[in-house]
Image (tube, rainbow, N blue to C red):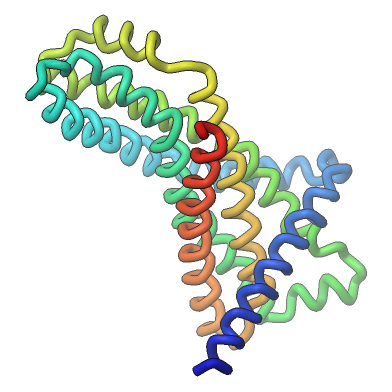
Length: 254
């Protein structure tokens, strides 16, 4: 049992080191931005436009649920008018980045792991290395940069749509006028809440791209290995998003 635990720990540490090194090396390829501009745009389309419908649906119902659950409790104390401030702060500070990260982790992170993993098991990655092609620049950098750009953009949309969803529920279910909802939201929300959510979204985007590509590059075992890499990419991304999201909130608001 001790030996098995040790193997798991060593594997986890090796994987973390490989992923961190891959991210830093790929970020160091920023000078190839213009050479990879078309590829980056394509990755931004895949990461952003393709996932936008799901993001809009999740954002809307996140606002619905948050407003309804909190509003029903606040109504018992006659404080339902403050629901605008509560929903806006929670969406911009926590819910927006978290929901966007989980959607992208499931849709984009898994796709990256499967795509790169298939290239790895079919020896396409080895062929690139034989041709002296820089794998981090060719494979990882466009995906990483696209996620760094797209995740904050989608998070901003999630924040706004979720807040609007909360306003709809506030008006239809709690009797809170749209003007009252807006005034309280603007009065309560501060710039720190906005940039905290944006910083989180950038970190989450880097995590999803790095983990997806890292799991893909470490894939072994043919088709079954691709399936394992895809599953691991989603699980690891989710865990890191939850854990780092908590610690970043604790650091920013300590």
